[in-house]
Image 1 (spheres, rainbow, N blue to C red):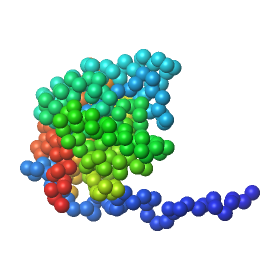
Image 2 (cartoon, rainbow, N blue to C red):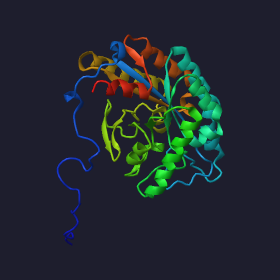
Image 3 (tube, rainbow, N blue to C red):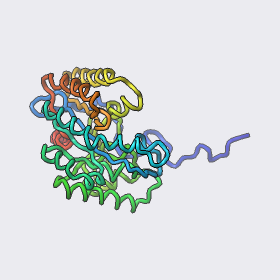
Image 4 (cartoon, one colour):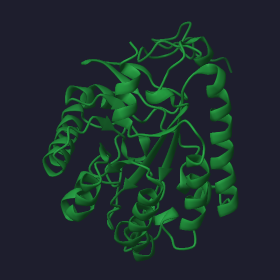
Length: 306
């Protein structure tokens, strides 16, 4: 049986990438970046504060979402443990080590638990928009007007409660529609965290102009390493150290680097894991030339270099 003539037809088929969001380039061919005060590595810790609704019925599967028949109180309360207890252990460790964090938060959680956002603002940490909640991921079948209203509402809520400009966007579970970057940029978002294809920021084109995509890696996400891949706490520490050692060595000859670490308080905020996190971060901060910075601070330093 032969294939139909249109089997291999694709309207965007051609040389290069199948989108025009950015110009393809290799990091080794780009100009070296310098950080403030001659720092070699920008340490970008992103703490995620999320709400997983008990009655989640998303259009697409959500990793770490409710996995048992309704009501899934086991998974629901474990996620809520992070917002009630685990995050305060993380606050304590970061404060002790002088590390500032960006905090990616669902707007629904910010409304329900405003004291969490108060803790973030009091520390002069950055708020990143992380969508409405984990039951509303963005996806390709979304109506563009509904998605635009969703993004607008999320940003209005977070900006109102935090008093910050809220310049960064991280989609729930990093899931986007084809319109998400355009709609976020139209509401004043200056950097995106969803695309995990680089170690450094790069220009990202939207209908409202050029923003930046930031290297918010999934490889060092505690949920990915400890829950999904089932690595041990010591393996998690070793991976954080190995990542830092490699970036620190590269920075000696290739310019500044960024080390992004993503923390879920219901994971590393557990009593038996917090020591591992503190050990890894202490190791990183013991080196000269480490700049603890928020995503917005990294963005500004990068943009200042033209």
